Length: 148
Image (cartoon, rainbow, N blue to C red; front, side):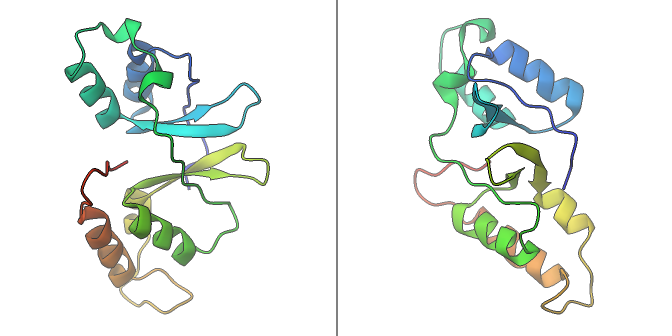
């Protein structure tokens, strides 16, 4: 899990969100509500598609207009295999890690998981097979679904 995570609010415009993504070298931003809890996620792809399908400047489009209504998360103490199941079943590559109050603790990314996989896998460890099967499930696009 990456602990230092850039985030935005629903009132952030897409020019500001793009700058956050660029400066922090990330591909997504958790969207944090007024109470500080995670309410959504947006990706660099979401921003590109939103701007490519509108005749508006990035500074005139807000995160609230493009954020996904469905949010998938995991908790810091969740088993990695539970997180992999979430990645597979919802076809996402990143999960915000939240505490019991839904406050942001970090981000879990498939890239980071792949970097920590082992060729000697058992149920207690993360194997290459776990990573490959998860990536295969993520890549099987469902009609109308978007990938995060």
